Image (cartoon, rainbow, N blue to C red; front, side, top):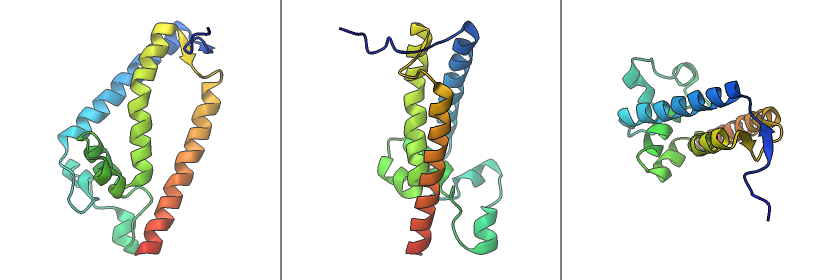
Length: 146
């Protein structure tokens, strides 16, 4: 029987170092999101960092495609997944993907292979296309509901 972790591009030592750093960066990002209190409105959590309100919302009076993103991550790390989805569905999927990247990175480091991916660059490119498409679709949905 074939080991399900045996496929994937072989990783050089520096690929493994980058994956380790990437996973630590993701962990730090989740920890940082946990330090923020989710805004009750479903957007605006980023203002706790001293950032201004969303310029798009201020100028045009409508949500931008990423409105609610920081709030979404802040809910996500608390296990408040429904509130995270309500804040921004596309960013919720991004948070799920980032959470899955952490164990995948360490499994790949141990196996010395990009587990499950013969061409990680193509996967990342398609992932970006899918994420941007979902962000625009959920934005259109939000605009239609307001």
